[in-house]
Amino acid sequence: MQEFDPRRPSFRFAPAAAGVGALAVALLAWKLTSPQDLGPAAPPPLDPAAIAALQHQAFAAAEAQPGFARPESVEVKVRPGETFEAAVRRAGVAPEEARQAVQTLGGAMDVVNIKAGMKFDAAVAKPESEQGPARLIGLSLRTGPARAITLSRSFDGALRLRALEEEVREELTVADGEIQGSLYQSAAKQGATPQITGQMVKLFSHKVDFREIQPGDPFVLVFGRKVTESGRTVETGELEYAELKGQRFYRFERPGGGVEFFDENGKNIKGFLLRTPIDGARMTSRFGMRRHPISGYNRMHQGIDFGAGTGTPVYAAGDGVLVEARRWGGYGNWVRVRHSNGWETGYAHLSRFAKGLKPGQRVRQGQVIAYVGSTGASTGPHLHYEVWKNGSRINPVGAKVPQGTVLAGAELAAFKAKKAQIERLVAAKAETRHLAQGPSASLTKASLQR
Image (cartoon, rainbow, N blue to C red; front, side):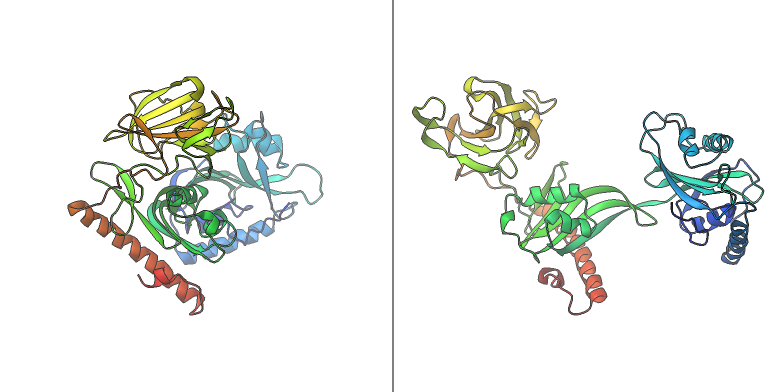
């Protein structure tokens, strides 16, 4: 059990009889909201000198708890089926103190419907005689990403309750660095979440062979986030920009509401149809005549196959309308999507369809529409993928599908403004890193040239 040192400022709990002093320290970093006092009235805001004096007095009191050792911090996790009061008692305090603490906390939170796994910190002081229960000095727990509740014992022995809530701001942040280990590990070290890195991987899957990524390769991510005053990220927003292997992609919301990624010239990075409607799969069978693995006869294979495990998500290759989602003979579970200008795509041997998917529904490129399986005439889990043009099947490999959108006019002007904003952020981050690490720091040439 870690010793509780009241001289070390900490948000996580209010120390010993120094509860008022600890709260004064906490107020330096936290915005105090919705105070609820069950003891004497809260003191008015203090200036730094008064805070220092009160803190000194509180420290002295904390060191001089008659009959008790110095307070210690105890972390408690609520067990399945356990009441909040029982969890507080496990910190070593007497039943009446645990009951009083829970009743006091009930003024700011639901203390009945407590979920298993919830954690809180209790500051307790053990008797010097090592006999009898410990005394509860303080207790704190987080009730939301930017909100916490602190319970502390004041000088007169009463329990005080405070709700502490940080202000949350929205911002764009830059995560840049070099590949060391996996991309996910490297990006995480720079503050990117797995979800953001996953968006990047999906974005580049059509342009970059991830097997060719080497240690030391630079990467840049720009994404939105909601962050507290203390710097804690409480919510991650959208990926706004990504750079890898010389490829740079910018997120842009078009006036009609559609969100797409474009290269630095304003060209949609995705073509009319995705090259592969599945992530990380290898092609196992090509379009053309082949010996059928089940019938043993030579017959036309009118699509291409991708080997993948059962349950792997299958994406719509392009924007369109779902025409079929049904069982179709040897194709097993089958999905067909109609795109514009006579183009259609088909997906076979699926284990199941995406939840809520039904004919007539519009789908977006990259939307999950089904999952890989081995239904119908199949020897193992894989995706059979077909491309149709004006009612005839064609080879998906090398098919001359239309190019993606190229921005122009007012849209291009708006895109360039967004692009300039991103470039300023990336340049500022690169300059900050350069100043912090010195001239020998490794920076991407592209970042320094912005």
